Image (cartoon, rainbow, N blue to C red; front, side, top):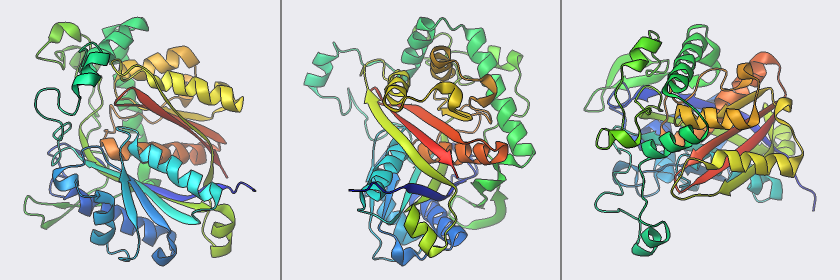
Length: 394
């Protein structure tokens, strides 16, 4: 059977709002619905032709429960006959959704589908669906990991120490993330990927204002300010003394969406074709050191494809923590100018379920701006997993 090409017709994201910031008035299903409607409008695709909508979301309870992707389809005014489902691979949820849809297109099961993701960390706080004791972790799970249920701050500290990283290294990296994101925002680089979002008040009424740029970028960031911040793990600061709010990803509200198609179908319908999904892989390792798998899955993808890091014109490694991005860079040695070239989650923000597709938007935007051909993205995920994706600009 001939394998078809899965291509990206378009990929967009909302401007990202700080937790309890400008997007706090948006119900997450409505925010994703807004994004889906704008994607359909921007591409001109007939929504009746879509085979499915696959979305990522982590905290699938409360306002983000009951299959939020399906709820967003309805809230966004798309046809009621359009099916939708929600997946959870933690921070890589929408990146995994991209893999699922690409595989379905390549196999011939889908011709056109939407990939998306959303997270309102204001209205569905991180881990709010896992409260009490050890939360969702069973007695047998705890026994297997020797009761080492570590907070991510402690994990980021240990992995950073293993890579020989100092507090100064982490803060310097965080500062550069803000500088790059500030530059990209100020010079209009992000305009191609960002959907300006009308701001709502606490009652959900439109205020007349619009959020058109990422709210978390610190334009006045400095090493002095970053160095003054205390450990983020305030209840056990000695286990993560170098991990602060400044060198960690931000809690954020936002959504992202992409239209993926079979190439022949896109051509027949006259849809634009921006890139093709070339390779992807998923991997897992230590369920205690849950942030370590990007290195493993990248090795897996490179071994499987025969590609080399210097072939990639842009690389996105999610900045869950500065130590994770730097640990990846120390092993693979990418060109520093091509590595998270427009900043990352430390500055832009990390609305968990949306970040995978956000990274794809930023990656493709960079390839188009620079004339690059190949891009790679990877991110750590809860449970000790990671996804890795390669796209080729067309």
